[in-house]
Amino acid sequence: MTKRVAILISGGGSNMVALADSMVGDHPARPCLVLANSDQAGGLEKAASRGIPTAVVDHRPFGGDRAAFEAALNTALAPAAPDILCLAGFMRVLTEGFISGWQGRMLNIHPSLLPKYRGLHTHARALAAGDAEHGCTVHEVTPALDDGPILGQAKVPVLPGDTPDSLAARVLTQEHRLYPAVLRRFAAGDRSPIFLT
Image (cartoon, rainbow, N blue to C red; front, top):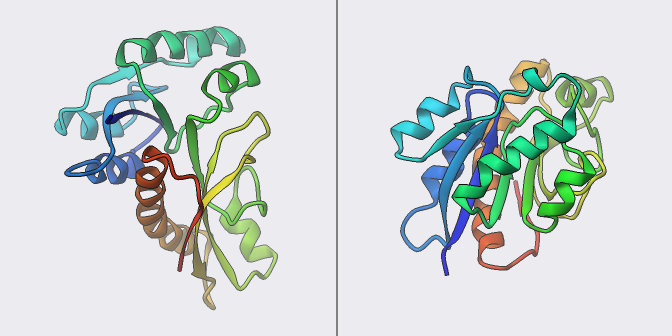
């Protein structure tokens, strides 16, 4: 049975596009919704142009009431009846209350080789540490930030003269390869990790 995938975004949605464009042919899943936390998210237009339903739940009116924001997220997700949630540049930290309802069905992509560099500014941190390689990780979402079982990683070399921006651009290319590959396997019920170089 084909799985229904909702993709949560906050910005331009390049990973969302990579995921959506991969879900064709014999893929075991299809996109059912792209949900953003701002109506300014550029990915909404890209989703609509692909015929994917969109929704917006702006976090700002909720102030610091994360539980109310997450309740509104679930209300927006419910009509689409997703089987899997993919966080693709969704820049809101979700609480245990929300995550527990989707445990085992929610994926995230993070721009580092976890468990290294949880949180923000991963490219600058890899450069500051003098790392020889950097990359990205797709993992199942658990209540701990950027934790959870690793489902895939892709590596890039750190080159002489790299800046956080040049390194980020190289990692993003790998994100667009890795996330669709992991989703395809995950939607088929296979949680064994994928490693790309």
